[in-house]
Amino acid sequence: MNALLIDMGSLAHPIYHMSGNDPNPDATSIKIVERVRALATGQPHVAICCDAGRSFRHDISADYKAQRPESEATLQHQIAIAIETLKGDGFPVWLSKGFEADDLLASATAQIRYDPSCTVTMATADKDLLQLVTQDDAVTVHSLRDGSTVDWDAVYVKFGVYPSQVKDFLALVGDASDNIKGAKGIGAKRAAELLSKYGSLDGVFKELDTHGTKFTPALATALREFQPRLPTVRELLTLRTDVPLPIQEIWRPRVPINADLAVFGEDHEMPVADDLFLSRLPSPEQVHKAHELITADLEEAMPTVQHMQDAAMESHRPEEAAMPTLRQEAAADLSASPLPPPSASPAEIVTVAAGNGKSALPSDWERQLEPRSMTEAKQLSVDMFASRMFSAYGNAPAVLATILAGRELGIQAMASLRAFHIIEGKPTLSADLIRALVMKSGKAKFFRVVERTAHHATWETQRDEDPPVRLTFTIDEGRQAFSGDDKKWAASGWGKNPADLLTARASSKLARLVYADVVFNIYSDSEFD
Image 1 (cartoon, rainbow, N blue to C red):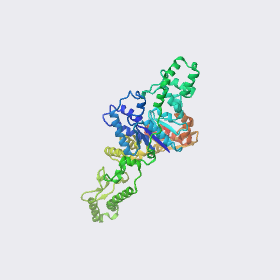
Image 2: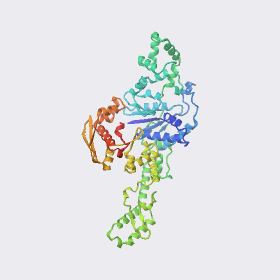
Image 3: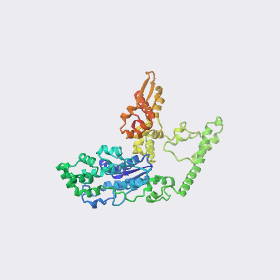
Image 4: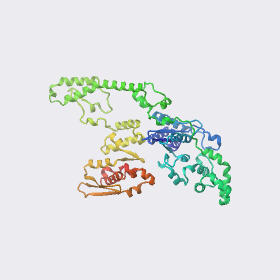
């Protein structure tokens, strides 16, 4: 099992600074929640780690984070709002007085990794946490800066040192964001060279003491001036792994608080947030209550549903003209106990013509739940986003945009939300659906695969009376477009199922080449692997 640990500080600060001109005073908290929900999509085991004010590091050094304001009241207020919303979503949110989010991330990682079968992904932009990355990929970082996955090799590529050397690297170069001063005149390149050659700062100073002439006078001076401060700097950079945390929360089902209210009603007595974290599964009494409520609703609705079915049957009988009395009684019954009116016109659901007693179900019964106006589409978008089933879209307007995009392609609302996938911030469709849109358009005489292997895939198509067009996509082309190294390639869909990925890529590229008017600007999810 994989656990996703989200660094609230790394997430909140850039959002706060980018939302300064937003007229909505709660824009920061709204965007924080949207980002967390997007990160958590498809991740059942997620916890959020937060700072809790002044930390023990301020007692070690008065200079620690001295350049920062003691309290950014507006930001802290927005974080507090976001935390309450996220707790309502059912997320474990952790903070501990005297410790920073980094310490909680490190402690949670240590506790989770106590079980070797469990892995950890940390969503952060903090360089300090790179020291936790492991060589076996059991602990990796999801960069909040660019969305990349930072593993053992990626740390070396970026900094020239391995994760086990990150603390000594930061000690030498310093950390401006935390006001930690390193060795004067030693930058990232020189620090990486020293640690690569001597392994650690202890190794550097041992060599300096025994063979000082190997160092230039300026470098030797800088190191000797820094040496007395090294213990303090190391203490500031050391992540605590002993913070007590309710780690079991991350493995329990994520149950939104207001989802319980929606089932049981606002008058139902609900546990407070802290109690809910300790017991997320509904009790047998709650399940029984839910069953009673649903059963009662069904029993209450059944007479009306039966009348609707009777009315529909009556309208299709040959002897309809000879049975006005029964139809009128059915219409009277419907008027006496109608279903709650939908947002669309009631006439669109059940038509009862005044004076003639004629009742009928709509001819497009199967589409009655489709939004039929922009107002209904907007309301559906809000409801679908609030359900948290489509939180990857980030906000309700993005859900609306997806519904409208699907409608333009002739796809119903719910099918659109299931069909589109948001990858790297772009809407994508499966290659199968792209081909289906082409075939549904009636413009293709055929669209078929000619050859499919682990090395290449060839598709061909003919549009109307145009000459047939054939396209081949090779594994070499796929490798050139892939951004990761050989290790990531082997772990990706390309490495595991090359024939499937080649088939999808070739068909989607051919579809856009020949049928641009049908699938313009639509990419398949395989093109983002």
